[in-house]
Length: 213
Image (cartoon, rainbow, N blue to C red; front, top):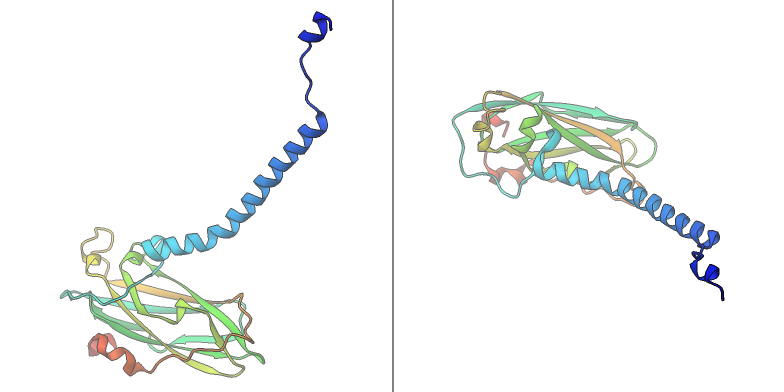
């Protein structure tokens, strides 16, 4: 073997190089798709925990402290691409910070077949999302309603006393809770509706006449 042969560098196989590059590109593409699908539920979960973007968070128990400061909570209802009628039985409620409130919402399926929807929610001002807490809500799961059926849903909530300490919210005397029903990905024909409990089920949580209880 000559010295010329020893000094000549080995050239990579073009076919193997192209195959490796193709596998890398495919892996990156699949990973991006996976992240895109995962980002929606992860973002939703993050918002529900932190109240980011005006998203209301879920609570396990009502606060012990009730402040001598009254708020007005207004309710807004909307429907997107569903033949449903969705309304709140009360335009607004007044309650003290830390006090438990009970509101009712009515949904009617005007279509000819069972349909499943889910309510997406947020509050205004956005900073109030971290302090508006729900103990019971129809928005925690998909709701299936039969053709021509009307269902009444309760929503039990309170405003955390820390609302009065945050410089962004302490001077805000009104909160607007907005719901929008969207079609669910679930099959309406196989998801039976769990009917809402009666109003008396929420009464042990407390409240006052001023809160609509």
